[in-house]
Image (cartoon, rainbow, N blue to C red; front, side, top):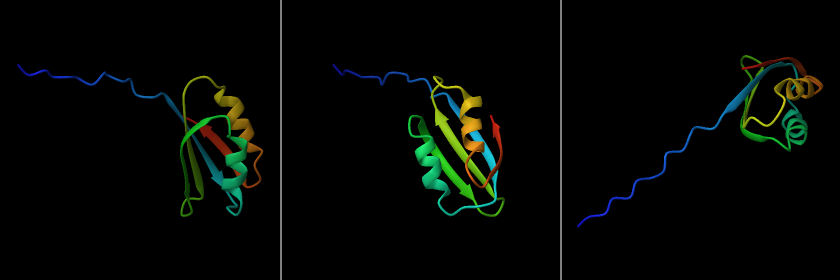
Length: 83
């Protein structure tokens, strides 16, 4: 007799992606890390070619508009979009 154990099905995490146009990069990651400390940040990617920053935050227990407004206050961030 063979027993087969099946792994439980886990729903994919809900994520929100913030993309911002930027003009300055020195110290930006440190400022953003402090700013987003309470959130479950899954990805923080900076593209120097297109001057954009992408931040992926997991979960649903936060106000995306408020996070975007916080990001727009970082020196060097020009415009934030949420998807």
